[in-house]
Image 1 (cartoon, rainbow, N blue to C red):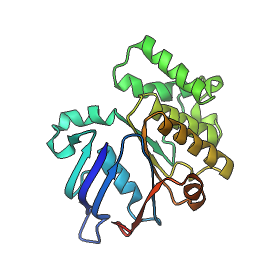
Image 2: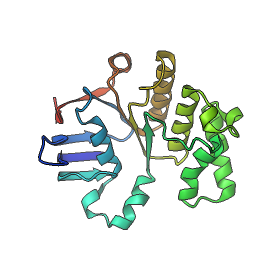
Image 3: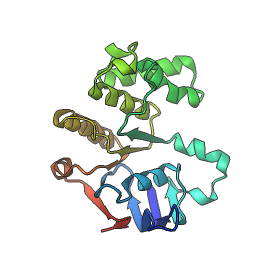
Length: 216
């Protein structure tokens, strides 16, 4: 599903953000990436998503080598990947419905199909009653649910989450992780970057630990 071979990422002449990372993530696996701030967790997820290119090495997603894909096809590949951010990155003055539907509109989904999929996802995440609310009026937990709905509505093969519980209290953090666990149980590959040792210990999933850009 996700394969990285000797991936290094350098931004300037300083120490590389990632150094010689070789990693395989299987289809349907739930993987934690952990390590201190600055260890390279976010950079690794961006490379998996295709928004950053490695300075050296190879990355294969769903059997396709990023370096051999024409640039015009990269956006199509990214549609198979959902990304959940710590900061949510929602459109604050738009409704919950619009924030979730935007992912489908970019893909050119028919309006009837769009409504069906968005309503189903909002029901699944228990926020349908907030569909017409602007996201800026929601609580932090509700905003995270909208962010997850936006990522899941595309029916992605892969979910990447960068510190998704960093702005949530312990109860909401656990609730969020339970959602990812459920999605993984249905066959979606889930990769979560977090420094929350309590959550990592609770779920007992495979862990990749980064230290100064290297796998420790």
